[in-house]
Image 1 (spheres, helix red, strand yellow):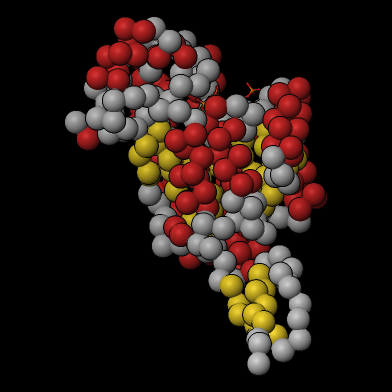
Image 2 (cartoon, protein in one colour; image 1 turned 90 degrees about the vertical axis):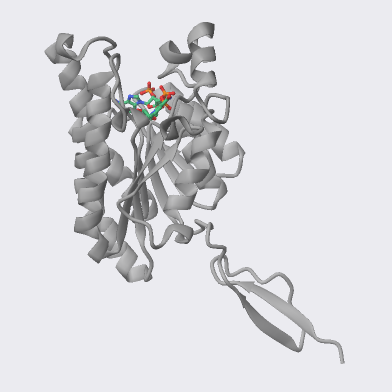
Amino acid sequence: MRRSVLHFDILSARPACQLSRTKFRIVEPHPFSLRGKVALVTGGTRGIGRSIAQELGRAGAAVALCSRKADACEQARAQLAAQGVEVMAQPCNVSRKDELQALVEGVCARWGGIDIVVANAASNPYFGPLTGIPDEALDKILTSNIKSVLWLAGMTLEKMAQRAKRAGSSASFIVVGSIAGLLANTVIGAYGLSKAADHQLVRNLAAEWGPRGVRVNAIAPGLVKTDFARALWEDPQRAAERIAATPLRRLGEPRDIGGIAVFLASDAAAFITGQCIVADGGVTIL
Ligand SMILES: NC(=O)c1ccc[n+]([C@@H]2O[C@H](COP(=O)([O-])OP(=O)(O)OC[C@H]3O[C@@H](n4cnc5c(N)ncnc54)[C@H](OP(=O)(O)O)[C@@H]3O)[C@@H](O)[C@H]2O)c1
């Protein structure tokens, strides 16, 4: 007697075939799958945030992204939608608390909650000796790189914890830090200060929210070829020196970072919290 096997994906609930004398086999979700999850990525229109938004979407999450510019938001939304990602984009300057609140409310109104947050947007308006930084530049760095992350945590973690409890799973809050927060730097010292604070914020929030089922981790990229870091890699001599000092002998690309966010957001990282994953081609091991 021939027997057919019905593969039944419990997340999509779409049977692959239907024949008589069926035998059910429950297919365990892949540990890296984000199907059914809702993710919010700040600064997702280009660079590292764009790679993160794209990879979270390719792993199955519905993705909300923001940037300060409406046209950039719409362009990124259309491109991700064309790749089959369920996506929304809303202009938001993370340094403005009311805009951040409106973004969180917009995502919850669209998809009913949030499971994954990636606090990626940041700024660095100053290059030079630390003691020479104008107050205005320091305030901008502290607001966009630290305060906005804490605001976002305050707006989302309680909701994420409640949703994770209902679903019997964990939620994931990820901050994009930097190796500038791990090493001394004579050029981007204030920025490094803010990223070191982000790494500590991650440890503190992980300790506070672990008991509620929310994991909190950081990614610390090395030099990645984006607009943000253009001043550090565009000059060929500077780039060559940096490459020579990198064990993997190349600079980072945005695509080097997106998959790390997928890992941290997924069940594959279910026992990881309060950590900072360094992705720098080995620069910090020397
Ligand atoms: N590139 C590197 O070498 C490197 C290394 C270590 C860490 N990082 C970190 O990686 C993250 C992303 O940097 P990136 O290199 O990908 O930069 P990027 O290519 O310049 O992209 C930054 C993204 O954030 C948005 N953005 C900037 N300020 C914003 C604000 N106040 N509110 C909302 N969105 C904002 C930008 O869009 P709009 O301009 O339209 O707002 C854009 O989508 C940052 O946290 C940065 O500190 C970068």
